[in-house]
Image (tube, rainbow over the protein chains, first blue to last red):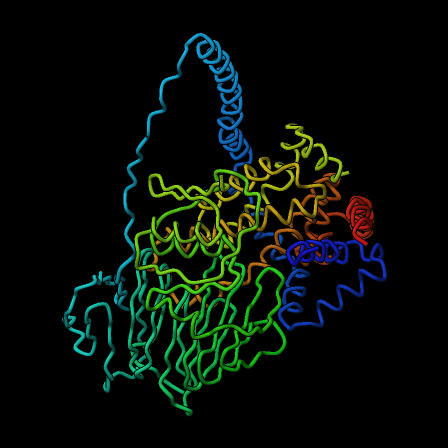
Amino acid sequence: MDRVERKIWLSEIIVRKLIAEETLSQDESEQLWEWLESSEKNKEFYERMFLQKELRDYEDIVSLYDQERGWREVNVRLRPVRKMRRRLWTGVAASVAFVLAAGVWLYWAKEPEPRQEVTVRISQIEPGKRQAVLHLASGEQIRLEEKDTTLLTGYSDIRVDKGQIEYGVRETDTAEVYNMITVPRGGVYSLVLSDGSTVYLNSESALRYPVKFQGGTRKVQLQGEAYFDVAADASRPFVVQSGNMRVRVLGTQFNVSAYPESMEYQTTLVEGKVEVGVRGMKGSRILQPGTQAVWDKKEGRMFVREVAAEALAQWRDGIIVMNGEKLDNVMRALCRWYDVRYEYQDSLKENYTFTGRINRNEYLNDVLKTLTLMGGPQFEIRDSVIYIKNRK
Amino acid sequence: MLDEYIRKVAEGDYAAFKHVHDLFAKRVFYFAYKLSGGNQEMSDDAVQDAFVLYWEKRSAFTSVLAVKGFLYTTVQNKVLKQLWQEKNRRRLLNEMEWEEAVDEEYEMMTAEICAEVNAAVKKLPPQTKLVIELSMQDMTVEEIASALHVSSNTIKSLKKSGYKLLREQLGHLKFFLLFLF
């Protein structure tokens, strides 16, 4: 049973506890108690279930779902696949017929025609660049391009300078005002916070932060990947929150990778000392330089491993260092940076992993060629999609 | 037996697939709806995506638990990805969404618990069902009796037989759980 399945199984135990308590086996009761004892939130949840309010909410919400229509939609979406399969077979039949005909023709012709060289024009896909969108507390959004250098009107303390935005110290404000920076696919951007800490944001990432830090902690929220160079201030710890994961630091350099669609959130320490914790999980881990904390969201566990931390943080200079990296991880990172998609054209015969470095300032084609040279599969780019094939 | 249906689906039985859809679509919708912050369109899409994918990968599943796990996980991935990619990113500025974002598992458990209780209650005879529903809304036997203009004893026995029926219906859960250990 994985984590999700275990939760489904626990739900069923709770259902029987609710209305048919005596059907629980001893083992089931024990498992339920163990779960309840493991966190306060679990207990609160369990007690809420006994109040039956949830049951009424549930009824209200599911009544919004039109089951008949949903089923029709599922049917419509499955139909083309079935048809295609039939078409595929007629296609195969046709090509068999063609091969037979060609064979007969070749048999009769004395000399087969020389094969024509087919040249395929491949469009070059350029790497990402410095770009971002600044979201002000007023709801206003400002596009920031590579070359922009401006002072924002009305915000004299914010300076935008060629791919970097810098917050000055604001003396007057007492209220906590939040801004956010989002970096799209194919983008990268850096930011200097009001305390002097620098944050390098990778593609498809967002950082939410106060214009001026208030109170005893400097707290920011991250989705995606960022490298932090935190200004030392022992009296005000710096906290990065990503979903349920929290990284608490004093003054240090580290990298956080927390893409919501990824099963693993990684915190890599380059210098200094940080503490990584996950909400609802007992115990936090303190990292030493050169180590990485990995929170496995699926299994609900966290472990620490040694990594070449400095090398991993080199994405800021365009260098992606891989150390036994899985093909999917490499592809996902490339897709975010070049703003493309990838698909498997064949089911691969090997589990490819990569060790080495690639330069993402190059054209996508060249990067993919390097990956193939490193022993990877064959790639082909068509219409912003990378198709992955077995090596010939 | 539900696992029997799952095996039939694995062999390509489309009618069994519809049965599984009808049993699980609503609870998975509930989950999607909660995760997406009440976005009906996104939830509809995610539910349909999950079932389309399930059919495409049907041969890989042999138990109800695995299918449920797959449906919830798929819906969660779809919704979170879409929230992140498409939805007006301005909403991320809202503190609540960042803070409360990751209680998915409780929502999933709520969906499971409510769906099972609901399904069991729906199968009760009308009078019994009414009494059970009212007592689930925290009404006492006396309150129900006065509301329905019948004696407390009648309510008591209806309630008793109702819970007995529920227990019998929930037998199937127990049966399939035996396979796990």
